[in-house]
Length: 301
Image 1 (cartoon, helix red, strand yellow):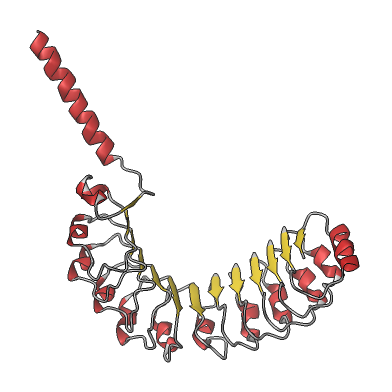
Image 2 (cartoon, one colour):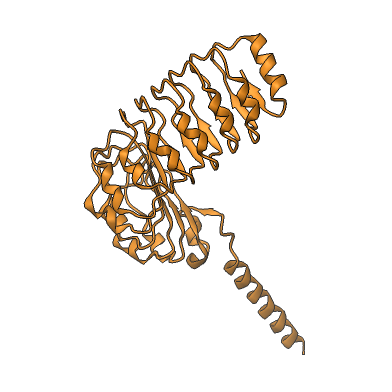
């Protein structure tokens, strides 16, 4: 009887151990050494940021349920063929890998949604970009990419990031995607925004900081879903009163512009919570007026 009881307790303990392994935290990031301690099928996120790493760890091959892989800061220029088995992989970061081209293995990933390529040396996108038919988001920084238009064959794109690329114009390829939600174009040489943005009724986030804009396009006033508008570090000397029509904007950056004033219409921005106007020419007296005019807004001067 005693032996039977001990066996039962041991069996229940063993079952509990397996249960804990099966219920791993889907938001936890695992590294190479962690993969040797857990059931690889319960690993959903993997991260390794080490400049001495030049190859994707082979142990990752067993993580067939992986959803997110962050290889930022490594020196990996080849993606192995077993990535084609990662049917649940949605996000891949190859940022800061000193890449001059996107590794061919990336295009084997069947359902990739987000591709992060910040701080690389890529100047050309291959024709195989069209193989990523589920791609929704692409973010890059580095040298100017000569053929961004090739992305027009990725129909599901809605989030674009082309930063620090020396762009002289708003990327025309984005205009092929009127349902775009996020646009990141900071640190370029863009002097104006296209009128076509007025029809981007799904746009929620627009970051064109550190460019050469001289005015805020009045067309933006009709973008009801726009929540974040970042215009810092441009050459904007005047903000039109139509800014008051941006009812949905919650965060507004006007800092580091040669602004002498912000119009009274800012008080009409019903959802505005934060306005950064640091390093402008707005007087202390006017700052006090603006704070009284829009008491629910946190101004930073």
